[in-house]
Amino acid sequence: MIRVERLCKTYQVPGGRATPALVEVDLTVAAGDLVAVMGPSGSGKSTFLNILGCLDVPTAGAYWLAGRNVAALDGDELARTRNREIGFVFQGFNLLRRVNARDNVALPLLYAGVGPGERRRRAEALLADLGIGDLAASLPSQMSGGQQQRVAIARALACEPRLLLADEPTGNLDSHTSEEVMGVLTRLNAERGITIVLVTHEPDIARYARRLVRFVDGRVVHDGVLT
Image (cartoon, rainbow, N blue to C red; front, side, top):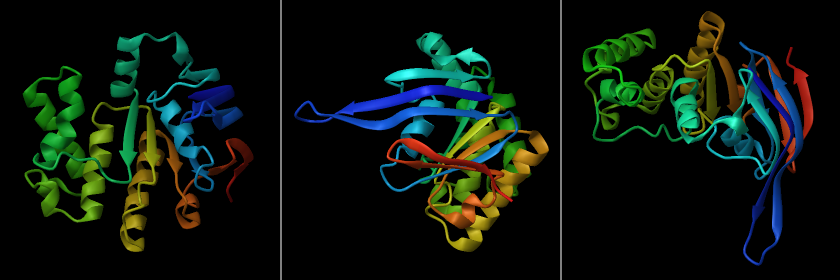
């Protein structure tokens, strides 16, 4: 599903000094894998996730997603890839505050050109599958953090992506709710075969993965199977 070779990302800071965020990263993620990415603050893990999600571009190196060289995609193809091939889950949920759960979930389908009736059907089915079908008409302000994250996961799944990228998805949740959310993600991985790359700073969350990749100073210093 994912292959990166000699991936580098360098940022220019005020004064003209170059600051490396990723240094010669080589990594492969098989379809259907569940990978946890860890590392201290500033280690490059979020930059890596942004590049995987086609939200940022590397300074050097190559990235193939499902066999396609991402650097060769034009702007429209990148937009379609982000919308249809990749689902995103964030720490802050990123839900539209004045829009109910159903319409939040349906938003990627609107951008994909799906008609209103089908958008509603798919959104309601996803919410029901994640155990919050009764909240379809509720606003984010009427939900708990765990419920909001389930809505965010449903939205990420709306276009049936093959890859789900989760950036600290339990960072704003208590331990019990974090377990519930990780239970949802592991079920989706097991039942639907969705490839999941998860950034976390919590060892207890990383243990849900089958594989752990650790970054330090922009480099991969550990890549191994979790037992």
